[in-house]
Amino acid sequence: MPALADTAELLATEIVTNALQHTGGGAVLTATLSPGPARTLRVEVHDSLGRRPPGGGRPADDATSGRGLLLVEALADTWGVQARGAGKVVWFEIEAAAAA
Image (cartoon, rainbow, N blue to C red; front, side):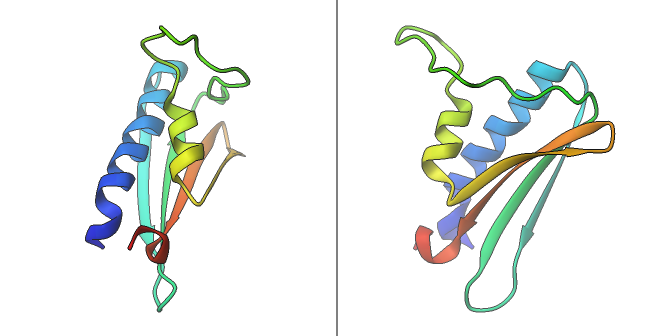
């Protein structure tokens, strides 16, 4: 789905970067495009250390980082964090109709 590519790439980069910077471990990214006319792209990033991504406050206006999850919140149709095994998964979904 070309209409989803730019937004999906930006948001995936943000949540992968968070997993790598804030857990000190690796990450696994999966992307799934649902079938049917109401197509939704779901991207998940799994880490194995169990720490939650940073959040809860806004970065300072002059900060050079800290806006990744704000971008995810602003651009994804839905997103969240779930505990999974020894770690967590941060995910987002973009609906194809919203990106067209």
